[in-house]
Every structure is written in C-alpha cells, then in structure tokens.
Length: 447
Image (tube, rainbow, N blue to C red; front, side, top):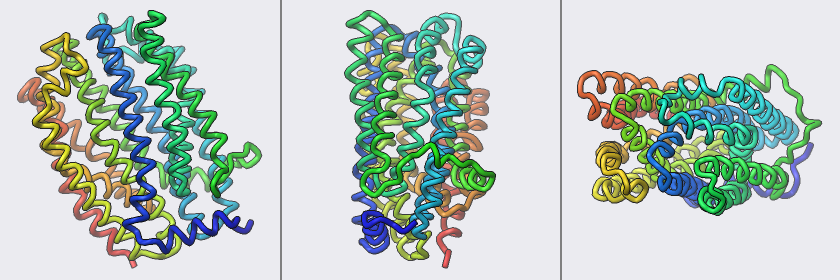
C-alpha cells in the first residue's frame, strides 16, 4: 500500500524539520496529557483524602495493581508503537497497520483475563499487595471498580502509545484529556454527592476510562493515522517478537514499579497505616512532577523512531541531546521548589493527619535531592528502547525501580528503619544515573 498524502507529508515533516522545534511541537500535547493525568491522580487523592487515612492507604495498595496493568499495556503499546514508527520511517504502511491491530487487541484481551483473575482471587491479591485488616474493606470496594475498568484502562494506554509513535500526539491527548477531566468531575459527585465513598472514586475511574477508550478508538485513523480494524488482527510469532523487542523495557520498568510499590507498602506497614498513606500521597505528587518530563520524552520518541528508520542518525543524536538539556533544567527547578515546599504540598491532601504530613514531607525532600538526574535517566531509557537496543534498554528500565531500588529499600529498612525507606528512591536514582552514562554514550556512536 502506498502512503496517503497525509502520511507522506508527515514523513517529510518528521525527517526534515529542525529536531528541537519538532520534539517540542510533538511533546506539548503529550505534556498536557501527562499533566492532566497527574492532576487527575492528585484530585483522586485529594477527594479520597477527605474520607479517612485508610481510604488513602487503600488507593496506595491498589495503585500497585494499576502500575502492573499499565506495564502490560505499555508492553503492547510501546512494543507495537516502536515498530510502527520505524515502519512508517521506511514507508511500509501495510505492516504498520497490521501491527497496530495486533497490539491493541492483544492488550484488551489480556485486560479481560486479568480482570477475571482479579475477581476470582480478590482478597488474596489485596493481602499480597500489602493491605492490612483495617485497610482491606476500603481496598476491596475500590479494587472492584478498577477491575471492571481494566480492559479499557489497558486499551487507552496502548492506543495512546501507538498514536504518539505515529506523530499524532494531539489526537492521543484528546482521548487522555476526556477521560481525566470526566474522572475529576465525577469524583466529588460520586464520592460525596451520592455518598459512595471510595467506591465512588473507583467507579469514576472505570467510567472515565471507558469513555476515553471509545473516543481514542474513533480517533485512531484520523490525521494520517492508522485505523484499528479487527480483520487486521493477524497475530504471528514474528509480530509478537517485535512487540517483545520494543516493549520489554516498558514491561520491565512498569512491572518493577508495581513490585517496588508492593514492597514499599509492606515495609511501610511496619510503621502503621500513616506511613502507607504518606508514601501513597508522595507517589502521586512525584507522578505529577514527572509528568511533563515523561511527556517531553514522548515527543522525542516518534522523532527518534522515524529518523532511525530512515537512517538519519545525526538527527536522532541531536534530538537526544536537545531533550536531555531541556529536561535537566526542568527537573532542577522543580526539585528546588519541591524541597522548599514539601510540607505544605503533602498537607494539601491529608491535613487531618499530622503524622502522615510529617512522614510525607521527609520522603518528598529525599526524592527532590535526586530529581535533577531523572531527565538523563529517562531519556537514555527511551532512546535505547526506540532504537531496539533491547538488552541495554531493559537493564536501564529496570534500574530505578528494581535493580537498585529494591536492595536500597530492604537494606535501608534493615539499617535505618523508616528513614532508610524514605531515602531508598534517591539512592536508586543516583546509581541509575551512573549506569545510564556508558549505556547511552555507547549507543549514540551509531553510524
């Protein structure tokens, strides 16, 4: 199949426009999407925080499941999306379209299976995720609706990644924005207006994700994008191998994030429900702080994929270093602000519990110490993943939340107790930065 006029124009744009302007242009919709998603997470935490400490802790417990399904969705979305961007760079429209359908249908189907397992084993799963007896009733209520929304949550993440990798970040933004804004509107109505409590927060999430899924499915073929057609669902070992090659780093990163949250909750449980709630609040604040960083990196990804597929390696290197410079400046400014305002930031969400505020402020200050390093770490991971350097990308993706974080967490708790848990992420970030330098510099020598 020959490229359409819109697809040909996009190819010319991606391979000729100055990379700094191109990355920024593509990043803006992704930044908006990530920021709104981060605000939605904070709004969820704010409204649930008005119920009680156990409800906030319950969100923290279920959050580890949500990071797991996000990991699998990113595996299919990034894996198929990376292939799609390189195929479009080669102007191979047929294979790109087949991969889009295989990636999405596989993701949604996996979501249905995970939801079924979740309903069958709800209590054992929640115990495994770190729920205490006092948190369990609230976690069960919230988890029920998250399970109902699982296929749609995964479908949204997968389509978002595919659309961004095609250079359609603005359309992807519309889908994410619609779901997030609907969720923010439904939260107070369902939690307080209808008196559903934490069940209302879960129901708001499920309904908003279904809405976003339907809209994104409608938008996939617009603006020169690849429409999703069931008849193009032609799974083969080769296509799944390509998805694995591009998606394993995302799966490793997000899965280890889920495992790290589980372990963090288990370690925090030794210090009471207040500690679990504090880490939950700081986790949401950190997600918002990192939202623009991830969004800017997502602007880099299609530029990298198209130009790598077209053989324009100088443009790939220029886009990488431009993104590193922008993100290092951004992270440094935010780190200073976060360190100074740590206490008031945490107090916004749990003003009724002084112990939660005290622990949360300490955690946030430690994370701010290493945040300026995050831009280089994230860009190194995205770059390695997009150029199909699977093993280095998996290693880099596993570093912050697994290879270095888990030992820092357990060793810190053993040596220092709660302060050791609080500083674990900063230690892991510092070591990950050191690792990222040789891995990324070596890959940047491509010819």
